[in-house]
Each structure stands twice: as C-alpha cells, then as structure tokens.
Amino acid sequence: MALLETRVAPEWVDYNGHMNDAEYARVFSLGVEALMTAIGLDEDGCRRHGYTIYTLETHLCYRREAHEGQALAVEMTLLDHDAKRLHVFFTLHDAEGTLLASSEQMLMGIDSDAGRPAPFPEAVADAVGTLPAAGDDWPKLAGRRIGLPPQR
Image 1 (cartoon, helix red, strand yellow):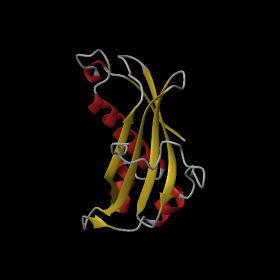
Image 2 (cartoon, rainbow, N blue to C red):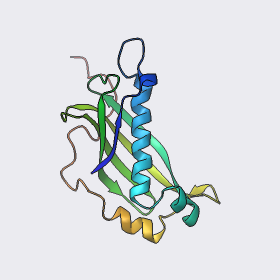
Image 3 (cartoon, rainbow, N blue to C red):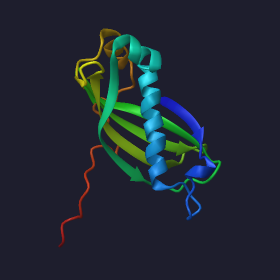
Image 4 (cartoon, rainbow, N blue to C red):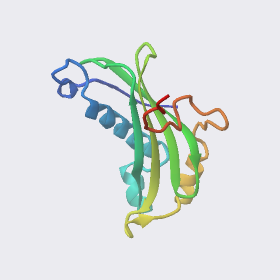
C-alpha cells in the first residue's frame, strides 16, 4: 500500500552528501502519520475518537543512499495485528522502485484521555481490516534481529 510520496529536503542532507540516517526515521514517521490518516486517525479523527497511535518499537535497515531532491515513496504491509496493536512493515523506494530502506514497527493504540493502551475504536478496527496484509507471505526483510553471526 503506497502511503506517502515526498522528496529529500535540503535540510535532510548531511556532510556526506546524502540523506542523514535520522531523516530516514523522519520519513518513516511521516509514513506512520499517513497510515493513521488511512485508518481514520488524522488530527480530526484522533480528537473525535479520543484515540491515537504510539510507536513502541522500530527496526530500520538502510539499503541505499538518498540524495537531495530525490523522489521518495513509502509503502506499507500489515504483518499482524490484534485489538490494539499493529505490526507493520514499511519500505522506502526511489522513483525507479529501488529499495532505499525498510522499517519494521510495532504500533500501539492509545486512549488519549487515559494515556493508556486501549482497543481500536470500531471504525478504526474496520479500517485496519482493509489494510494490505502479508498473510503467510512476509517480506523477506521482516522479522530480522540485530546481532553478529556466530563465529566459526
């Protein structure tokens, strides 16, 4: 599911001449906001439902450099979900479809007034049910863990 299209802003470029590592996280954060909008939790929806989404965990993998002005697209696949959590996999591509980065995230639904986890409001849960899901065909880069390979 394509969620977001943007370009590498000049202020995102570091002394190496490409997008700074922190800015990849920014783009994926904008992807989370776009996902929230897609499931009815834009600013108005958050107010109306008294509900929002927090990021609990993220695993960002860098694949290729992005440069100033370069077109970017964020896509999302739903890996799993329950009554109040979303396990999602985002990919960041350039205009030619080259994979630049991926971000696997665990997102939690929060009752804004209580400041505590809570099940998705019914309309949001219904919208979550329409998201493109990986099913048994998870992306190859999903489910990875950080660690050095065993020494032989």
